[in-house]
Image (cartoon, rainbow, N blue to C red; front, side, top):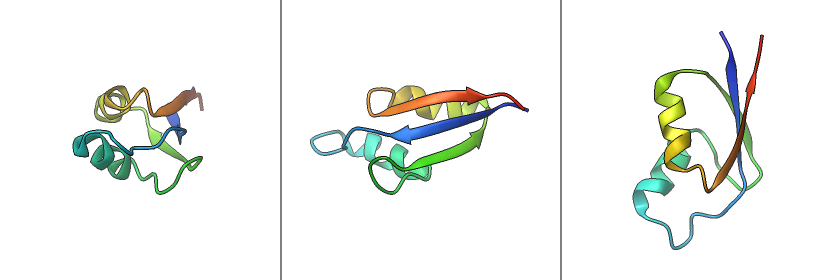
Amino acid sequence: MARIQVKWVKSCINRPERQARTIRALGLHRLNHTVEHDDTPQIRGMVASVHHLVQWSVIED
């Protein structure tokens, strides 16, 4: 299964609380922190909801 690499690049200050909670739910703790997740529809939806705050790429296995 492919994996998605997500990097937090823009602050959540002055953003809706829901977006900040999504960033935390993705496992991101500080700016420039990078995490990897399985490429599932749920993770894709979370990344899409905060696409303006993160950079992401697909990693093929």
